[in-house]
Amino acid sequence: NAGVTQTPKFQVLKTGQSMTLQCAQDMNHEYMSWYRQDPGMGLRLIHYSVGAGITDQGEVPNGYNVSRSTTEDFPLRLLSAAPSQTSVYFCASRGNEQFFGPGTRLTVL
Amino acid sequence: SQQGEEDPQALSIQEGENATMNCSYKTSINNLQWYRQNSGRGLVHLILIRSNEREKHSGRLRVTLDTSKKSSSLLITASRAADTASYFCATDPWFGGATNKLIFGTGTLLAVQP
Image (tube, rainbow over all chains, first blue to last red; front, side, top):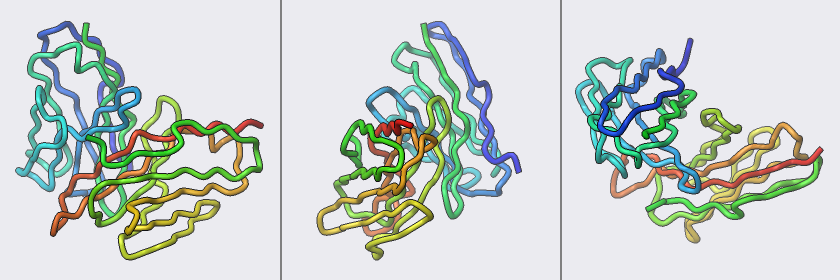
């Protein structure tokens, strides 16, 4: 099992650009989520999904969109990147315990 | 706002000593979990304690939960240099049902000196 995979590992964007952070898991977990981690703030929940076709907002959803067309994939979209979205993004999937991906370090200039 | 707050924010100890980290939270919970994060890496699940449990052990880890005080502690015994990492508590809130929102605290940075 690969577990939870994320791509890309690093990304630099200009303000206003859009991009999609990819996340996939091969554990057949129904629950998947996206977090951002900023210094001194811990991890904050952006969006989550309890199964294909079902998504919901977390603590900090503004500026991000998600969709869940399959059990395996849970992409996170930034429609118009802002410097405030500079962060490290973690995708996670949960069965009996939660597994995290390796993270995507995003810088918005 | 953050559900969990860890204390202390940073802790430095010598190899072989015990390390204790505390977590306080605000709402009723279904369970509380502890995670470790090595620098620049993803989080790794360490242990989960349910709201009806008071203590749980896993190897050198001991977790306690006091739901009346809304607090938990993580004890790492006989620490090793490899235990150097950030440690986070995370709560699975309960509002009359599962919320499916795992909320993380701000973490404790543990440094174990060889």
